[in-house]
Image (cartoon, rainbow over all chains, first blue to last red; front, top):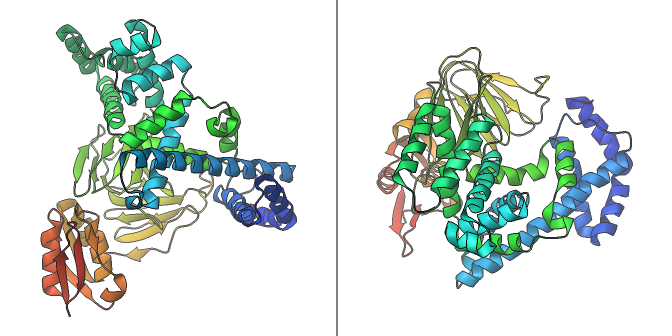
Length: 171
Length: 323
């Protein structure tokens, strides 16, 4: 395990040895030379930010794993931003009143909420979305799902519990 | 002291039961009786209700997107994330995945203030937390420690003595652990600003090995530091009275650049305050201004400097030097 200065030195030699390889790897994955350089930077920044991770024996597959996560995350974020702007403009006349910060903020929150909802078992998720997002009553939700009102209440309780855990991870 | 898992589960059941719309009076009474059994019951139930309120607060666009993307559960791992992603996040100790989860925590935070609003919260351990304008924070008091998560804005912590339970304010950048009583923590673009008004505070950047205590700094009374995820800035001395004045509703400044003072005031103002920092260069402000009435504060600042304030058609306040 490397800490602080030693960690930084280890990263520096990791960078020297592998950054061109990583650049090429990302370029092939993303098909874009410009962005590849950014992602190489971002990958090493991540590692630098987390001062107490153990650097593994096979650094290339480790670097590739981290870079891959960053690529996926970036695509996902843009997808959600794009979808949100689309939703937003369907209810508003002018998109130009939106600031980039507002879009990024909304996307980040929604990304988190989606992650939360996707983790719920499908019937629980459906019930929760119908009730909390669509605003249906318990009766209507039960009818829409073809289950009893009792089940809806049980699903809602499960969803509440899960949301609570996300909102207050340390309880 | 934090609600136990079974308490959270019961609170979730109560919330689901009462969520239905038509609630029988005896159900309401039974829930109230359950809440009265323990402060932890009440806390857990109130948090469930807060979850509801925060979902209700989502905009139309937010709802539409959630509806659309939860409906078509993505087959692709790309959108869904899942186990491998979580594993990778753990691999690098939190990281970018955590920022989304962080956004969710922020959205559901226990204490949230609007622009211009300040709130004093009395915590169960007898500590007080003053939550400044436009802030979000959650409190978690467990048997082992007292932890305040500050997501945005500023808090002042007036910490009740308890040698066995450290009192920690954490932000995305750093942690500040009370070694005495009163300090403020503020989240800013360039890092987290910690100001010690009484006694001392131990400040640690996130990335420093917390186990080794590397990179941590003890900040003395009357001193202020800015912490990034990597390091703590050199401490600079501040006027303690001035630094804590916001908790009493005052902005106290002593020969400070006008653009800094206006930025600070705009945090409290419902109307945007607009100015060009370049035009305000060389103009300094001294005085005490009411945060509860930013428009009046602005008039007062203009009156004592070479500035003028114009109310724009869109309601914003434009500040510029007098011709």
